[in-house]
Structures are given as C-alpha cells and as structure tokens.
Image (cartoon, one colour):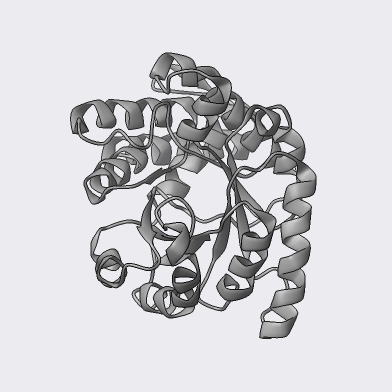
Length: 293
C-alpha cells in the first residue's frame, strides 16, 4: 500500500455544468459534500471556452460555502491543457480526469499541474486528482494508475463510457465485476473507491438507487458521484454510519483497548472475536461518522 495521505470524507459529489450560472448559484443548497464543476459531458463544444472561463468564479462561489470543489476536465489533450490552465486555482480542490487509460496519463496531468501551481503561487500538491476509469485499458491498468501520483485521491468507474466501449448494457450484472476490481485497486493503493454498481444516468427510480447505494457501501465504496440533486440525500444517508453502528464501534474499540492494556491481542465483544482487522473497520466507521467542517 502507498504511503498514507489525507483523504476527503466525501459521501456525495454532485455534477454541475460550469457554464450554467443558475445551477452554480444553487449548488451549495443541494446537500452534497463536494461539487464537480463539469467542463466535459454537460458542456456543448460551442460552450467549452465560456465554461472554462467561468470556472474560477464558480469555484470561488461554491468553496465560499464550505464545500470542496472538483473540476472535470476534457479528454482531448488540447482541451485538457486549456482546462487545467483555467481550473487550477486556490478554490479548486481536485481535478477529475476522464478516460484515464494508463499511469502515464495521470503523470502527464500531474506534471502540468506542478507548473501551474508554481505560476499561481499555490503550495506544491495543493491540487488533487480523481481518476475516472472509462475503458478496458484503464481497467487493466488500475493498480498502476492508483499509484501514479501522490496527488491521486480516488478512482471512479464511468459506467456509461465503459459499457459503450465494451459493447455491453450498463446493468448491475455487467458492471459488478469492474466495480469490485476498482474497490480492490483503490484499497490496495490507500485511496478512495467512489461509485456504485449501475448507471449514473439512471436516477428516476429513487428506491432502486437507494438499494444500489446501500450495496455500494457493503462492497467497500466510501461515497459516490451523482448527476441529480435527488440522489444526494440518499448517498449522504447510506454512506454515513448509523447511531447503532457508531455505538457498536465505540464499544468494540473500548473492549479492544482494555484487552491490550491487559496484554491480550484479541478479545471477545458481544459474542464475537475482535482482532486487528475488525478494529480497523471500527475505526473507519468512526472516521466516517466524524463531524464535517
């Protein structure tokens, strides 16, 4: 596993078109932990330049309400470089990089950010990266991608693009294996696995969406991205430990610490054996439940 790095506690992140001022103005009211200002899919080609020019102001607006701001850039390299030049700034926490196919892809983006941070007078490493895996090459290279840069904080599978490249339907059955592989790769690298098994575009059936998000937590995902405000409350609730889970984790850790004080490495708690892996899960529960600034 890579060296430990500070990771955000994002249960939910909402895509907002960077060029639509009314959506940006309301973004902080949607309840998401983070807002993704989009320069890619939700922005027509004719609007790319104006969306790019709007990023700095939009990011400052959203960040001013205490939210983390991400920017999803475009994949064609000429557009990507222009996007980075206008997006790397004090108010932007993370760049979401689409269609990542290799570790070199992330390394190249990170090198450009190195230069821009110097120009902007930002602290080295200020800008983080989120890799969007949207093709079979990226899936095959996820372990290398996850370790490609100390800036990288998470992985996300873009179900629609991935399914289109593979030639399959974006269903729970077809997407289960690649999403599980993503969780494993992220955990091996010590970064965030974000997402759920299913299409991000399908938000009309909220009961079905709730079931997918609960499954995502069971699979080890720590949060997810959404395209509609109605998805946010569901993600926030599902990825936040319940009061019962918190109480159980606290009791478990207290019993474990008492055992250590008595010279025992494994103890029994509520009829189950408690050892280091179980303790690690309990500590993660409490980390997720910690108050958010």
